[in-house]
Image (cartoon, rainbow, N blue to C red; front, side):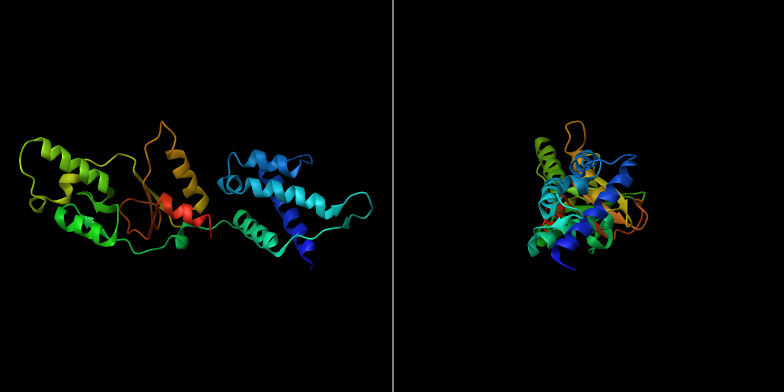
Length: 235
């Protein structure tokens, strides 16, 4: 199969998929479908400019003035390679697990605060998971620790971190700074969650914790930060 033939096969499969997503009862232009679907599908939204370019390229590849259509151009290997990746992302989206699988250490609220701070510094972490008295996960950030220190210092007493438990700082976490997703959720949904949290009326989401079925008491199987998704776009 030539590069042009493969490009057209991918293009036609995506067009059919888009028509299915839209329940289209009439023939709709590829670029128009991309424009509509980009509003509700973060994968298509991420690649919408590329997809529009590929629509133009498709028209350049195929000469419509003859019957049957004649291929008059061929995409470069680099273009075809990227189109394959976009095709795979849309038709078979990656899941948060194992894409973001990693070992995650969580701490009990009775752990010494100094121990936790030293762990964060050693591993260059800005946030860690703390189990509360109900064995549910909470996200303690370096900002929350700083806020706790500032408030304690304002009380006019000397602060000795070694005298405190991590639970003392946990009361200063921001509500909504963490959510939990099941292992079979898509990377696209994770990206949507961060995008939505960037809105002025939404709390700032700092991390998504992955568990087997998306429950706070389960063992974490991985964690996603906004920076992870920025890196993931370049894969």
